[in-house]
Length: 293
Image (cartoon, rainbow, N blue to C red; front, side):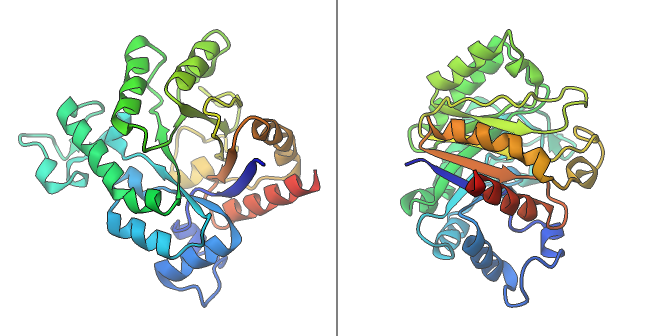
């Protein structure tokens, strides 16, 4: 039977911690994770976008969560072609020469990317060994258009990940899911055993990503809700993600999620409208709506 797992894109976001959602007894990283895992079955790890995961943290996460709990882990920024501070790289991998503190998108040589992928996988090993790893999220940059070079990049990601890391892809350039390009995009994902990440955002903003749902990896489908702020794609983080979902906004998604569940072994539904307790509130609402249907 397909599982529909609903959660949020962080359990450590300062806005959530400061919202009062965590009880007084749930203090510190351990207490907060244990409390979160008592309420939801899946969570996304955002910190790994800013630095490689450590095996120590992965072991602690596994120890602090019940059997069956899953972590979806965001790929380290340079692994998806984003710029990154030189200081975010492991000390022994930092390039020499003038870089003005940051590495430009795509500036890492192939050998260095290979090593980052290897260390990324090693850092997640405790999650894999305990059955806690849900997927690795490749959040592509908005400037990556659907051209042959970009499709070759996806093939290289699968090669580097091997069979050990399940991959899910979120496109930020709408061209990938435009009607004319969509069949090729979905076929590319199927060929590389990558799950398409369906997204919910405001549709009236420039370069909005259409809410396309499809199962491209039979074992997994992912849906991420970013909120419907008209500041999506610009402004501060709080401006981009400030939104409280209503029942009316979420209800149409329940049927889409159930259709995904007919073809995927698991569906992960994650809320990224990370202002105060808006994400956990939306996740609880979605679970209620799915149960009512």
